[in-house]
Image 1 (cartoon, rainbow, N blue to C red):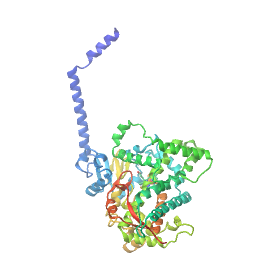
Image 2 (tube, protein in one colour):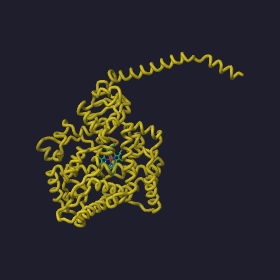
Image 3 (cartoon, rainbow, N blue to C red):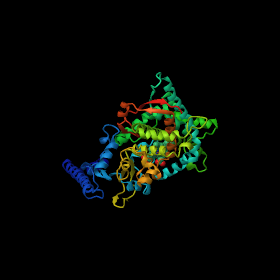
Length: 514
Ligand code: HEM
C-alpha cells in the first residue's frame, strides 16, 4: 500500500510529456551551443587558432582513414600538408603536424613527451612492450631490462649468427645463378623478398636461437602469421576508433601459432638447462633477479620477443631494399661503393665480411645514411601526446592534451636543412664534402631511429646488419636493374613501415670474380 502511494506521488511529481520535450530540447540546444562555442573558440580564439591548416581541420580532426586512399599513402598527404602550410600544421583542433627540426627535437628529446594515443593499438596479449607502452615509468623499467641485449659488446657476440644467415643468402643467390643456362644471363632474384627473409632469419637466430630458414624455404608458419598481423596492424592504425568498437576494447591477442611457437621455444630453452648467447636469454635471466619487479612473466617475454621480430625485420630489410633501388637508380654511386668495398679483401676463411672490416667505410655508411634519410621507415610520423603544457620553439604554446605528430619525413626532405633534399646524394655525408663546401649533414634534422628516451633500441643492431649485408652482396654479385621493376618501385607506401607497393623487387644477379 505504502509502496503504491509512493509510486503515485513520484508519478504526479514527474513532468508531463510536454514538459519533458521542453527539457529535452533545452538540454539538446545547451549541448549543441556548448559544442559549437567550443569549436568556434578553438578555431578562432584558442591557443592553436593561429596555426595554419586546411579549413576543415579548424573544427574537425582529419582522420587517417580519410587520407589513406590509396592505402598506405597517408605519409604523402602529410608531406603535402607540411609543404603547403609550413613547419607546423593543424590536422584538427588539438592535433598538430610538426616538421620544424627544433620543435621535433624538443618533442622527442628535450620535453620527451609521452607516446601518442595510437600506441594503445600496438598493445598485444594484454601486456605492454617496450615499444607499445605509453607509461614513462613502465618504459624506463622495460628498457633497462632489455638494454643489455643491445650493448655494442653483446652485439659483437651476435655477429657470428648474422654470418651464418648471410652465408645461406649468398649460397641461395649463387644457386639461382648456377641454375641459369646462358653464360651471361644472370638470375632473376626478388631481392626485396630475399632481404625480408634474411632479416627474419637474422632476428630469429639472434633473438631466440631459431632460424625460420625463410631464406631457403620462403615460408614458415610464424613469420607468415606475423606478416598477416602486420597487415591487420596497418588497417588498425588507419582505423583506431573502428578497431576499438570491433574489439569491444578487449586486448588483441597474437595468433595461437605464434604464441605456441614462442612458448615451446622458452620451454625448450629452460628444460635444456643450456644457456645461449641471444636476446631471449637476457629476458629469461630477468627471472633470476632478486628484485621481483624485474622478473618478466612468460607472456611478457613472449610478447617482447614477438616485438623484436616485428620491429627488427621489415624495418631493416626494407631500408636495405631501398638502398639497392637507389644504387640501381644511380650507377655512379654503385660504382663508387663497389670500388670502396672491393678494396677490402674478404677474410681468408670465408666470403663474408667481418663487421670490423666494414664498419668504418665512409661511402658505405654514407649510402646507408642517405637511404635512411630519403626512405625513412617511420615516414608517416612519430606520434606524441602533450602530457604537459609546452612551448615549442619558444613561440608556440601547445596545451596539455594536444596530439603532436612529428613529420620526420618532411624534415628529412626539407630544402632548409638538406640542399637538393629530394635527391639521393651520399656525398653529403662525407667529411671531404663538408671540407670543400662548408655544408655538413644536419644531424638535428635526421631522425630515422627517432630520438630521446623512446629512440630505437635496435639502432646499432640494424646498422651492423645493413653494413654486413650490403657490403657482402655488392662485392659478391653484380645487380642489374629490370626496367619494369624500376618503374614499379616508384610506387612507395607506408603501412607499418615504408615499403614498395607490391612488396617485391626483382633484379638480375651475376656472380662476380673476386
Ligand atoms: C633500419 C632499421 C630500423 C629503423 C629505421 C628503426 C626505426 C625505429 C624508430 C623510428 C623507432 C621509434 C618508433 C616510435 O617512436 O614510434 C623505433 C623503436 C624501436 N625499435 Fe627500431 N628501427 C630499426 C631496426 C630495429 C631493430 C633491428 C630492432 C630490434 C632488434 C628494433 C627494435 C625497436 C624497439 C624495441 C623500439 C622501441 C624502443 C622504445 O620505445 O624504447 N628496431 N625503431
